[in-house]
Image (cartoon, rainbow, N blue to C red; front, top):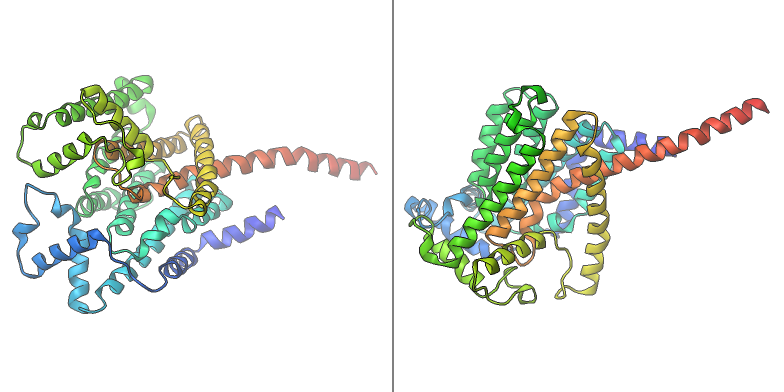
Length: 404
């Protein structure tokens, strides 16, 4: 039975067209054939009007980070030129294609990382059943496009750690980083993450400076995170502490939100008492960072909560298994990719802890891919343990049969 499952999984995950087709079909069915607009869609259309009217000053302003949505805004503009009536459908079709391409990268990486077709098939299953990803395919938002671009960065970084196979990998990595910056503001986080991976994780341990090894490395990461939280708390405590005009309106918006005790945007049940001290602001940031991983809410329906529990509890447990096994794995390349995936998740959670956590947790969508990579590694660990336990039994049965 296990051999048959392995063969089926091998055929499924070994063909990129099948992976793409399965994911695209699931994504298309999830849309119901109807694109959806959101509050942000109105904003993107307004920026599209600016592009079509050659009013680039509206987008490239130092007071706002509107240029960080240029990828989607350009797509919306092109779609509107193609069809003024069906432009939203065109964007949705692009989202479906991006979802399929993302699955191809995910499955390819897991299969190479673990050498397991079952783990790769599990990664595909976890991806196509993740409501926090599939849900956004029909919306005219940056989530699906950004997920593909951001995961492309991680895929290229992982290729460097595992042993480069892609030609001109670093050139492609640079292009992907620029594309991420012009798709969503959080793309800025990818630059230090990619540099860290390229300069440290992709290098052999003996070639690293002594201060970049072991405990010193972990301490440096923790100190950087603590410093970011302290600087942010200092700025939010008093708007006058922000010394620049650059993005001042956005800074003031975040400050005004946090002064109300907001933790998750538009979710009053998560709010804390209004902060008065720097310590209060640090507590709010820490709460928001942890809530990045929240998957139930008192405002969700019972069915919604049950579905999320059924998905996230196994995923988180498998991800922890994959993480702990990966960090002590004898293959340093696997250790490097696992560490990179973990740092990616922690960096994004910290970023949204310092800025804004959306009320429906859609900002978590790009990071679901990294959690699925860790979860697939956890499945690989459990499969190997099951194989080891089953081997002595089969051996004893064979010996008994021979004796008879």
